[in-house]
Image 1 (tube, rainbow, N blue to C red):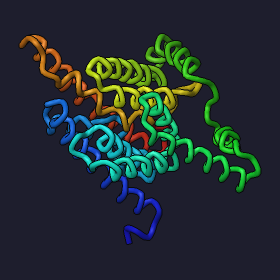
Image 2 (tube, rainbow, N blue to C red):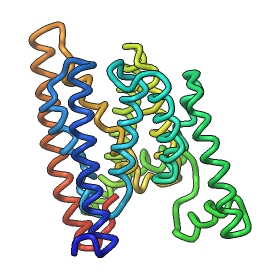
Image 3 (tube, rainbow, N blue to C red):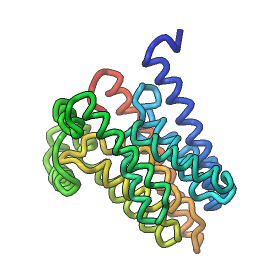
Image 4 (cartoon, helix red, strand yellow):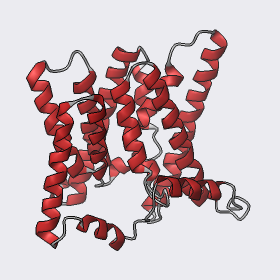
Length: 284
């Protein structure tokens, strides 16, 4: 009976994809960065928008396939040679059809990865599909307006959130909208940029390019309405600086304290926004 509805099937697929992604990421991080797999796993589960695993949204399936792609592209223990390149090309072609965020992976061309041409092939097919069903290759932009998606760009969204951050929302009892549209989008945007810079310093260029390109696309709206959910697939990188080995015991205690506070805060936010979502309210 569970598979007789789209929602039931979507939940089943999302739950499997989410836990598979969490296991893949945590095991890979312990091998590559020497951090605790258990703490990484818990950090991923604590993501504020993780409750979307209990919906039919495609974010969690995208997350699993994205990290499978990264593992294939970066890990030395992945598939050998042509098999790995073929699998990467297929994933790069498929990901934009699951979430439009997948087109951000065209940025892999910067790292001289020929497989990223698959993203351009996927884009050509997408434009042709729009032409076939609606008579315009750019119909999807019109569809966004039909669904009242906010127009604008990254900088407009940034200025909107900064303005909202210093507004009187908290004084007037609008704590949830303030969190949704101001504090959380700005916090994760800044934290992910900082994490990307750290990855570049460590020589993890492809991982940094992936995070930044998805971040730019996910925040490319006049109002950062769903940015926290769109950032869900790349949030695992935030735990790396906090779990990395520190030079002094004091620094180690500090970063671990920040890590546990962040996990507690994220779980609390997850519960709050899941209740809002369940009651029919807007929650990412």
